[in-house]
Length: 332
Image 1 (tube, helix red, strand yellow):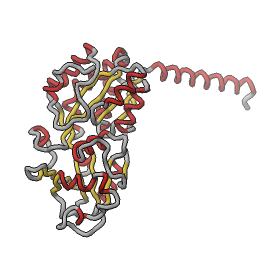
Image 2 (spheres, one colour; image 1 turned 180 degrees about the horizontal axis):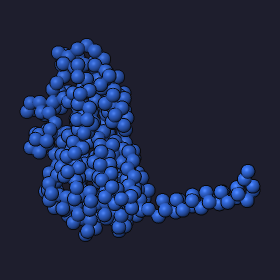
Image 3 (spheres, helix red, strand yellow; image 1 turned 90 degrees about the vertical axis):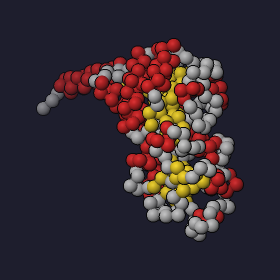
Image 4 (cartoon, helix red, strand yellow; image 1 turned 135 degrees about the horizontal axis):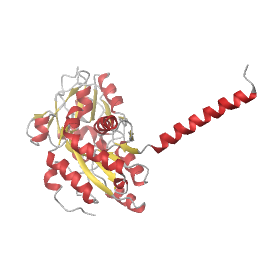
């Protein structure tokens, strides 16, 4: 039978073990990342490989709160890096300035924002930009409720819409590209920051239509179909070729990470970003997005070493040619 001295010894050993574990854990450098669900698969893949390469010497946490939610945390100095499926906005720049947060902007890939339908949908394999606008514009709320109201050849069935939430950069980009104004949209649709929720919604409803990043479409291409987008030159499906030749317009877009400039002074952040850019081509391709040229990734590292602060992107913008824009002087 254990006496009180034995119990105290056991408790002391347990407490010491807990202290040592906690001290070791707290001593491990952490790279904190949050933001876009669209960019998440890329950064998560980089984080996994980086942590393996570092044999646990550096931890990387990657959250998903949407681009807008990520920038809120970023501008409050709560995270080191924000994943963003659009460039930083003027309001976010001001919010960062108020908190003394400066940033280094890095485009990391191209995404083909993908409009999707149920596989049993046989009528809308191609949708024009004008039809998408008719579906999603604010004036459509409560009025455009059936497929045949969009196109008389389509069925007289109630349309069920799925899209990212208001904090999503994908939502902002889509509304700017299709409606002409960021965040200008009808509100009567199923919104979620979790793209898998959107996938399941479209996959389970014959009369559904939704949109999200290309990687989530490819990952679920047996459950949902991509719609060809007609911008006046015939329907074009999202693919590496149509993104590269700029024919998949206006839904082809660059996606980004932003690094807190103070965080960039930390060895673990510097190591992580260098690993990211050196392995971006392989890992971007692996998770089914479209890599940028080596020139862009090298330029990102040059901006990191020179601490090039600010953004060269104005608003969300569409049809951006990165190699040209990145040569411009920072606007800040």
